[in-house]
Image 1: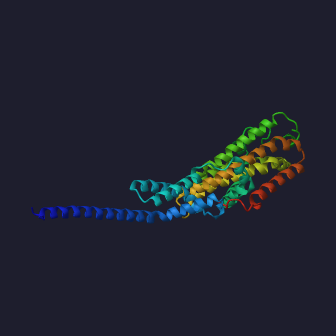
Image 2 (image 1 turned 90 degrees about the vertical axis):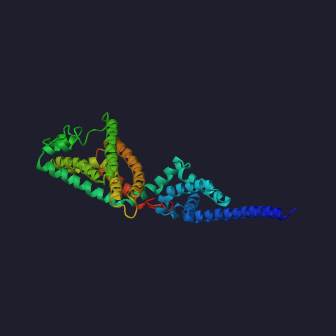
Length: 362
């Protein structure tokens, strides 16, 4: 029997197994190459995400830049997507384990439980509110100039034509406080109301009305801030019209005391709300190097913190209106209260700072 067919068969078997081994080695090398390429293409984002997450876990928020904080959600989504692709491609176990751990840690920081209300309140009152206000000081300055212009516009319009008074002053204020009213009638609206029933209800109305103005001033900021500025002019034009009325009867000093008790807090709150609206509008109109939506989102978060403080200020203003102004029936006393509140709010928001607060603009 010839051994040639057997030798040929053995050669074919050996060649088949040898080819399979070569193919397996080549497949393994290809998988390793794909894994290395996959990691190299995305490793920079993973490292950046890991650095941000590590800082957040250690509470070192001051060391995180605004860009990194803004990019955190996108970095997390990219890492989660990479993990899904890595599983589909059956990449090496080390990469899978690394990504799995990183995505879990990042998820906790992005979507996990937040600080308690008490913790947030401590940070908010401990300097976070003031830091947000200082971060938009230019916008607050624009709102202040606009409000002063509104007072001047209201005064000039009524001076030119008294019919403007009825258009500018709400009906609840135009009871006996109308052009032509005597000095005695106007003075009676400033004094002698101590113990009057319904004062708490009036204070509640005042809070509701000013809350509406403040919320509108903030909410209208998305339209590049222009409606916010128009609302501030319209609202303070009322004050200008009433200044004209009381000035005409020589009661401007007493009227200033009457309005100062709650007005330094109330108008301050409206000023901050207007500044928050302008801040959003200005961020959208001039986003800088950021995309418009990203700039608007950052401004919105900062402005929302300011608005939380605005609500607190309006509550204080309503209490001062309903009680303090009625209990203090002296102009000098009223001016003292109003002046102290003005100094307090300004010092608290712009001068007092804490080392452990978030960076301005965070």
